[in-house]
Amino acid sequence: MYLLYKSKDIQAGYNFIVGPQNSSLKWLEFGSLYLAQEGDSYQDRSGDKEVALCLLKGKCDIRLQGDFFDPLVYDNIGGREDVFSGKPTMVYVPPQVELEVLARTPEVELGIFKAPSNCTVPPTLISPLDVSSNWVGSSNWKREVILAIGDKVKAGRLIVGETISPPGNWSSYPPHKHDTRRPPQEAPYEEVYFFRVKPSQGFAVQWIYTDPDAPDPLNEIYVVENNDTVVITRGYHPVVAGGGYELYYLWALAGEGREYAAWFDDPRHAWIKEHVETPE
Image 1 (cartoon, rainbow, N blue to C red):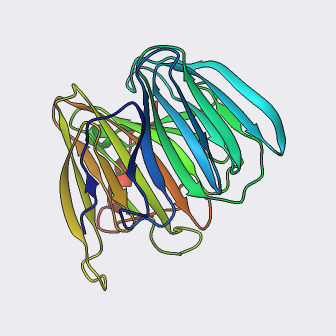
Image 2 (cartoon, rainbow, N blue to C red):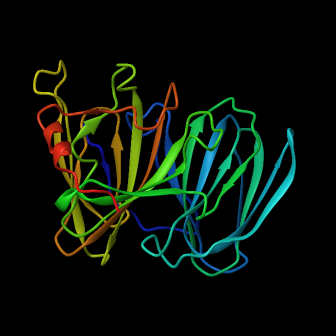
Image 3 (tube, helix red, strand yellow):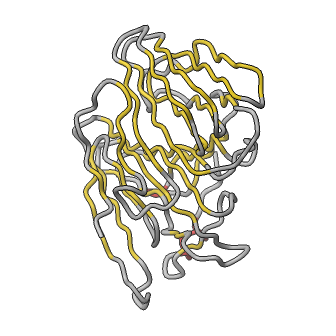
């Protein structure tokens, strides 16, 4: 089972990367949007899916029109130079909505997640001031976890955030999984990671594995580079940044339910949580 989707040349417009049609995913679809020039625009309809628009770089207007809310325009939102320069701006878009993204600066980039939904709530703008940001872990497994589309956003399936790891540090650690219904500890969610590395020639290592006695054991290790995407439908999935390289990944969870932190730590490594420094 190959779970790594290598970076391709990004073209202007929407670039589909991964979804049920080319992977083991059931719920999630992910792609990137690139608008090269100020004034360039992209139009789409959410259809039977909810959509998370995640600004990676630049500023844009987002215009939304649906049957159950007044037309909305989010003007001149975003603005960070890259994913390592500030907190994210995101927009949650429910199903059956016409949407337009208009570039207000050159080189506007967005990551776009989609998932089937029958949610009928209005759209939501999540500004950098609205996100939850925490330093998690300790020592060389300390990283910043940013939750943007979580419990405070009335979405149907999507949970979306970002993680930034200092050079050489582990994240998604201790290794955890979310592929089994084990309330209240664990719920089955699939996940997608989209990576950026600083400097851009850097790398990270992604390990995806199951318990050794699993009926269909999995043990995969991938070298991930800038703009690569990884699909996680089962198993533990720790990742480590290469020495000297800061690591970022945009992530989304989707499943039958919607509960953040419903995951199960690998019992062999859970002891490490006893050695956690006081959070900053």
